[in-house]
Amino acid sequence: MYDELKYWYLRDHKLFRTLSMSQLKQLCMIIGFKQAKKGEIIYFSDSETPRVFLLKRGNIKIVSVDENGEETIKDIIQKGDLFGELTLEQDKTSNEFAMALTDEVSICSFLLSDFENLMLKHPDLALSYTKFVGLKLKRVRNNYTNLISKDAKTRLKTFLYDWATRDAKDSETSVAIDNYLTQNDIAQIICTSRPTATKLIIELEEEGLIQYNRKEIVIPNINLLK
Amino acid sequence: MYDELKYWYLRDHKLFRTLSMSQLKQLCMIIGFKQAKKGEIIYFSDSETPRVFLLKRGNIKIVSVDENGEETIKDIIQKGDLFGELTLEQDKTSNEFAMALTDEVSICSFLLSDFENLMLKHPDLALSYTKFVGLKLKRVRNNYTNLISKDAKTRLKTFLYDWATRDAKDSETSVAIDNYLTQNDIAQIICTSRPTATKLIIELEEEGLIQYNRKEIVIPNINLLK
DNA sequence: TTCGGTTTGTAATCAACATTACAAAATACA
DNA sequence: TGTATTTTGTAATGTTGATTACAAACCGAA
Image 1: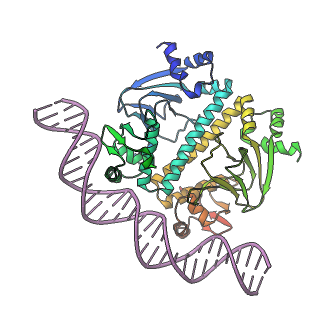
Image 2 (image 1 turned 45 degrees about the vertical axis):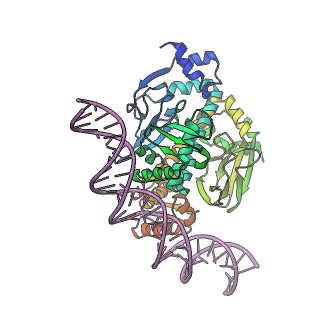
Image 3 (image 1 turned 135 degrees about the vertical axis):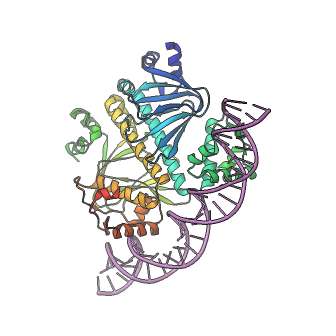
């Protein structure tokens, strides 16, 4: 793979905007690259070499497996998002993996240690990265608050709203989302059971807030969801 | 307040260990300082000058207020912990404040902008700080997972276990925690109602796992809580 | 030491949602 | 094209814990 292409993937990521061309080339040397298809498992948290990944194309889910083998979705990663050992410390206790939700998933990665060294050389990158992790923190806290104080239906609406505003091309009130999730996925994300999720989705359809099918979700007026 | 004393407060914080004496003195110039008593409100998130705080003594709680005026405890801050605008971005939407839980609370603070500049000059500080925020992220994620998959009693036990191991002086199996929380506080932390929290505390007492009163909580064998 | 506010103990009722189970529909695939 | 597998729809039952309400205990301050 040409260096040219490699650093192109980073070039248009906001996190790396502060780096100059030459600095970017330096990062390119430590980059890895990988392609995957729907259903494929991309990474395990217990890998020997801790990495940070950047999703360039497609969508993936981060699934965590507990002692009893129960799986919960921890995160949905969209194009342009980072995942992996974001906290810069390998966590031996957590057991999670990433799975491609769409075909044509492409990711690149760098070793944790290399990334750390780069940040030591470029404090502004470190600062940007901290803000990025801070944003993640804010999001998780937000989910946490929702889980405490909102019922399942509100959580579903909030989730759909967030999904629509994040995934959609433009910022119109009417949005069609490319639906790469099953109702089971959605149930896990909003922390409810699958039958409840199904019931609620049908309710939202009856209320005219969404048109749902396996391929796409049409939201006539995004503002009605919030 | 003497500079001497001021940087002493930072000197023994792990985050600032990487800084040299002269660098510490530099940070001292931007430090603020404040004392408070139990029940006092220390900071609001909507302050004009965003700050990062360091709790040197005592305990405080971070309370978030939602649209309906409902209060939820977001965090319990212990001695040596940082709080405030940890994400390095001021969040206008969140409405939260910090309240002293014990007498003799003392905190110091620095302006967000000054802290950022310092990190730009000292990349190793920036890296340490990033890891610190990462740790916060890990904790919140952990709470989230508990809330999803464990029942209220398990959450109470886990909370007591964490509290004991974090607050206790030594690492013995038998621990007496200085109880600066009401049952209402505890209820909010483990995300349940106050009556339920009371019921569960009594249950744990009957099971001999804890001895509870308003002053202290005695845990004969900490390992039985997990 | 007495009074008022706060914290804790307890019980009755109720709601949201989990669980389980199974059928129908859609999709993958051989 | 037919069959297996996954996903979705639906209903019956059960359970955790919220809510409400009130009394008892405790604590701080006058």
